[in-house]
Image (cartoon, rainbow, N blue to C red; front, top):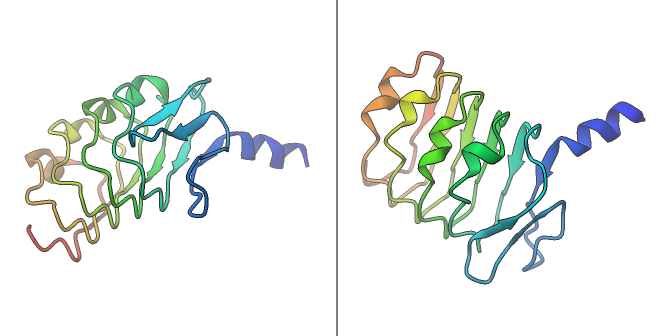
Length: 152
């Protein structure tokens, strides 16, 4: 049981489709659509915001606040408009899932710094009109899913 509790503490899951305010852990979506979080995220390997249709943007300092982040799931965050440039400093990130982020129009230009990235899921990102040049030079990238990205 001790191992299970430790594992749960290392996952910040904010996928709550039925409530307007997130009550899990230290994060919540403000009425302005940005994420309000506090606390220590230094050792958190996964952030899951699946279905947070009220999330417009991530904190600018996500790359500093969660340096051990390996998986970031923003699937179904339909209102998400931008990703912060500090996202590109998440050198341990192996999976970035942006499926269904229909308002996301661009990715940060420094994605070539995501050297550990193996999966980039952009399915149904219908506002996305271009991919940064650095995507093609990611050495560990095995999955690039752009199905339904009608503007690419």
